[in-house]
Picture 1 (cartoon, one colour):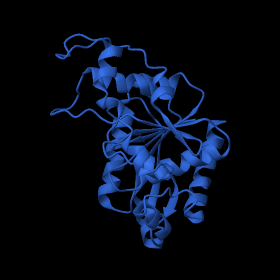
Picture 2 (tube, helix red, strand yellow; picture 1 turned 90 degrees about the vertical axis):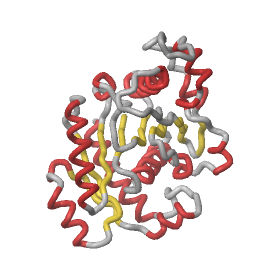
Picture 3 (cartoon, one colour; picture 1 turned 45 degrees about the horizontal axis):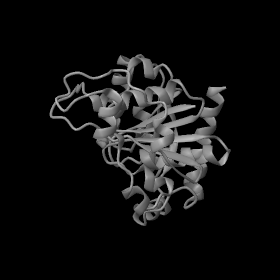
Picture 4 (cartoon, helix red, strand yellow; picture 1 turned 60 degrees about the vertical axis):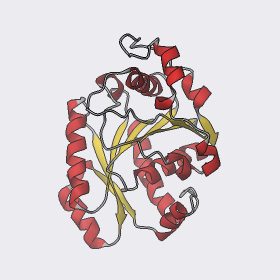
Length: 256
């Protein structure tokens, strides 16, 4: 199973990504949780300590490794576009609670569409994880899909957009779906998070096509408290974990 989870900041996609990863690990599966969000905090949601996470350098910041693998010089004029990356998840990933975390980071550029050694490395690593491994791979993405290419998306089992009951979140869904379609992805599903009441649920159901809507995760004070204390939401809230478990069961049926 290869799952990309995206959505605008603050909607809870990291919480959902982390609980999904822990649920698969609970079944004894080999799970890679990949943080591709510039505001990297997937590790905390997986149960890593702040000290452990401070010792992790995102791959995008490992200039020496990038130069070594791509052959790039400081001018970035010439470099390999197909560097060796198949050993990177094992070497640089950190494991906790049965989940191996790989922090990719992002490439900070003044303009969009950067073609540079750092971006080449990140795309090749994602490509390797998605297309050349039998493991469970969960990508915690930023709202854009810049790191995914047409070849990589062919290997994705699910694109999930996490939204809140609000107009801006719905707009993000429309934008991401358009980007996904441009990459050849036809199946894009939605999880509505932080649902407080029937009005919230009616709002999202009225704005998301029925075939795209996969379920709700309700607003949960236990999840908020876990986030405040830097703990994994998995196990802190049985209600939230069970709601996400039900959504996961839909994935599993579709993957068979």
